[in-house]
Image (cartoon, rainbow, N blue to C red):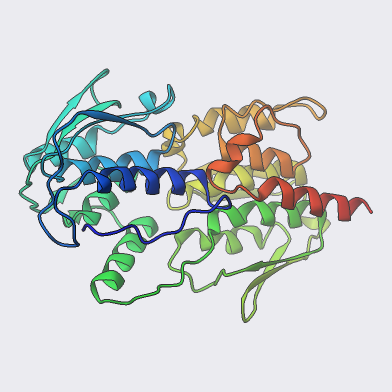
Length: 342
């Protein structure tokens, strides 16, 4: 699908969204044929897009560029991106005729892509590492046989809405980012209202409301969003809480830190894919949990590690990395903490 950019970028948007938008805008500006659903050709001049540590942007653009006829691009990123596997999706694209070469280590970024017309036949792609391998393919019109995933379901729903000409879709707020406000209420009590979130959301991470109920946070629907209420009871302390994060891995840092702060033993399963996130979150969360109060937390430049740590009262070595997903977070947290201390 091709067409003029539909989004107005503002300073309040997550850096990952801006990065993906600007990359698409750059590609769009080089199209010699414009217009949605037309065959696209690109002036064949090799250039590089540096996607930093934006895994979503990297996966989506890999599929997009592979089918953009005449495009020749190197997709690159930071050192951590070079450690994040991309192989299963590349192999699926090659099966359809994609011309993709690994610039460095086999199976990992950077990639040299020469866009061409693909045979968009159905694919069976391994999504163990990331469901976005399937989402990226489906966004370019490739049906995927992949295990059920809330993230893939969300992608398919948005595609169906788009194809049904449902215009002016109201985008919801991010449920995975809401996890840190659940952490806040669990640790400090009180009440927080979060606009533009619904318990009927298509986002799988809405399950955070269920996960935090035993941790003392009740969620109430409102006409414009949700409200979080503290119901913390001391009977929670020292209990074992067993959770499977395989369908909601992004919630793990906030839940793990909350449990540690409340004295609840967490037995977490389904966290294997966390080794391939912005940091190896299995390791960075464990390091955070082992950090004594008063010491600075090493975030490995991972936005979710930074937010989970800051809510729990830790200083972090990199606050700026939070802009990746939630530019207003630090300001909003400081306001809440100052009111709590008043």
